[in-house]
Image 1 (cartoon, rainbow, N blue to C red):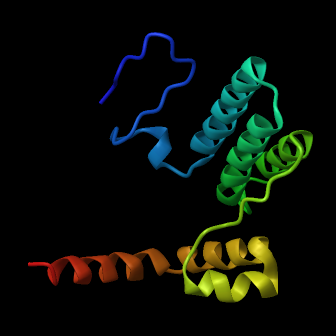
Image 2 (image 1 turned 45 degrees about the vertical axis):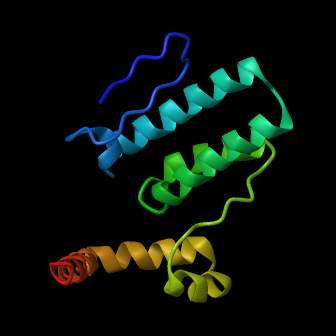
Image 3 (image 1 turned 90 degrees about the horizontal axis):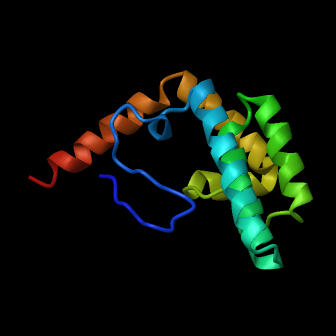
Length: 138
């Protein structure tokens, strides 16, 4: 659904089939970086404060978790913006395995492991588990 807000400077769409926001390809990741960059710059033009800089850096950090390791140029660009904005304290969110591995191999190591797992069929396992949970609700 699209809702109109007269004085809005930023927009958000959810649940649009085929939208870039539900994709993880190159085009989607470039679009994510560009919209984040434009949106955060617009916010900073209105209010250049520590609070807004932290929000902007955290937004780039959130996307950095998606960019790594498949899009090294976007990783570098996001890291530059995060540094320019003063840094982020945002941590990658996840389950028990992430909590176990992250202190040992760091978030980049965890992302490399996740990427390998998905390439070798982890998505099929997650989908099967989700179907089993849903069938138990009947």
